[in-house]
Amino acid sequence: MADLKPGDPIPELKETPDKYLPHRYAGASGDFNPIHIDPEFANAVGLPGNILHGLYMMALVARANANLADGDPRALKRLSVEFRGMGIPEQEIVVSGEIKEVDGNRILTECVAKQGDKRVIRNAEAEVEL
Amino acid sequence: MPVSKDAVGKQWSPVVYQAGREKIREFANVIGAANPVHHDREAAVAAGFRDVVAPPMFCVVYSAPAIAPGIVDPEVGINFATMVHGGQEFIWGEPVCSGDEITTTASLTDVFQKDDKGFYVFESESVNQDGQGTVRGIWTNIVRGV
Image 1: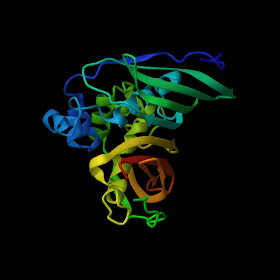
Image 2: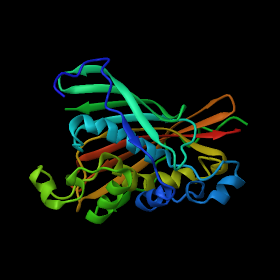
Image 3: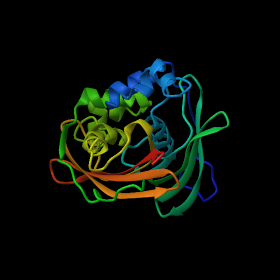
């Protein structure tokens, strides 16, 4: 990772959350909003089905950036994201992005998370210390 | 009706969270954080941590409960039924390890309107038992149809 430069892509991260991932994330995080775990409730408020937690998808973006430092939890210094669209279970999420700036051992990346053509997280900006 | 800025600056009571090994493992498993330092105490100690260390995004587990009272506070006036989580930023400091006690304080820092959307911006500050900052969070909630 020593020769990273602006314009280089970050390694893609691909993850397909299974049907019950939102339930496990609800338990792990404490966020039991029924739009994430109850398909009938989700339908009743106009959603196609129960949707992924935005912060779960943000965690995948965080992982993709921490991977630049072999998953070292000290590496990620800052991450900001915008949630757009809705993520759904049982469809692959692809996190991709590129390096925008390199300043010594600190790098700035810009990423997006997509399901198919749909962006579920956009304008993700991360600072990683290698 | 325009959004009200009256509650900007309001702060809610601190929330204290005790980080534990099994909760860290559970969270790491769900998000797919496979580094052994999140799962195995010996691996964590060998890497220089006091105990099993949390992935950065574990911060939601200990800091979100401090935001919750602000979301439902009638002085803030959020219509929860039409609220979506629009954006999120975290700035990390000291890593959180099993055994740490984290205190989080939340405040409402901004309210503004764009078209028919109200934007409610909260900030959270979390510190560990030694007073070291672990994370600062900026939470943007968007309410449609204001």
